[in-house]
Image 1 (cartoon, each protein chain N blue to C red):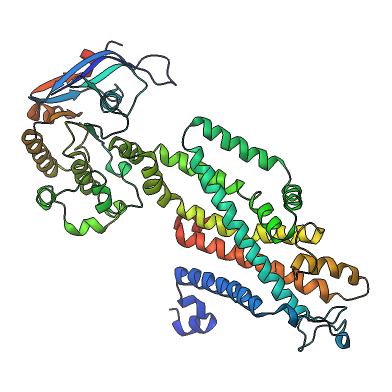
Image 2 (image 1 turned 90 degrees about the horizontal axis):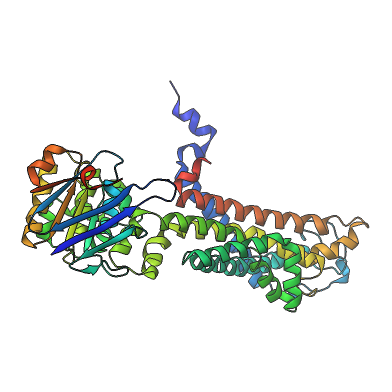
Length: 285
Length: 204
């Protein structure tokens, strides 16, 4: 006989069912992300002042991530940078899923539009992401706007493909054909029949664009084509710390880099778990 | 009121030969019609042509000398064999029903639909229960001609009779036309005044 007490003491999570556990994971990840954004709002840029008394200090309890060659606290800079990255990621992924939704629905109007959308997706996929982001970002004058638009205009392709396939399938279903015989317009069918069936894909797709958007924002900034150097972005921090790595200041690159990785992973975990909740059939994939 | 199909020919783009060739049919609302044919003989295809689901056929279909509308409510309505296919899985039954028209309480109870079903999703009802909704939806006041493609195959004998009786009553009250398509010879010969055999009118 199984001793229930023994089981309980081993793993307190074993009593919670999978749904609650999934919701808990989603709640925790989103809480951490929101906290970082809120914290970054309260960090005034003036607080990250240069202090030559404490330059190049390794990590300590006073300065968790150490300090840089100007005596700035790296923890504050990293949080501020992450907040900025998340904001840019949010704008970019919302914008790119808006593009995806519009294009997918335009494609469902008729065969010609559909061919055009498919061609447009292939066109954007045939150019390397990073190259296109740099081109768009430079042509828009760089800065947060340039990076956001650049990332948004390159990340809509995968969601468009998914939505296009889904809408095609729904359009051939019997309930849509019946709706047409009831005299409903194409617009009404798109709004009432198709949208409720693809909303899961849209939400999950948007969240899963997030990590890509943040990564690309950081890498473009790192290469010097993104945000301007006076902004505390993760890409800038990493690019600057490159110069000091050789002198042994390993903490300058390690902690901001790790923090970026963790944020990206958190978004990925949140996205996958939201997918499980909204679309239970995908839970076993 | 007459539903006339003139010289209807149809072939699926994937097949070489015609499935339906030079079919002439004429239905009116003073009789109950039955259509009988073997599996795969094109009964359902003919039904879809008559109710404007399939449009790339040869020949023409008219209802009282008018072509069937492309965009507005189609006065010829088809009831499918599988009701779960014609219902959006994300809609509740009340929305599914009101997509066509607002059905009154009396009619709901006549078809044995309980109020508690209205707040459920299609997956939460049985095939027989769903078919009652499917039938009621097709009985929109604007419907002039009703085609039932194996409508009662999903139902048990008692429900089958109940639903068919209710439908026939409404069809007679509203002077609608009715075409019953079935494999079940007993059912067709009991209900229908005129039985059409597809193999007799199809010239393939």
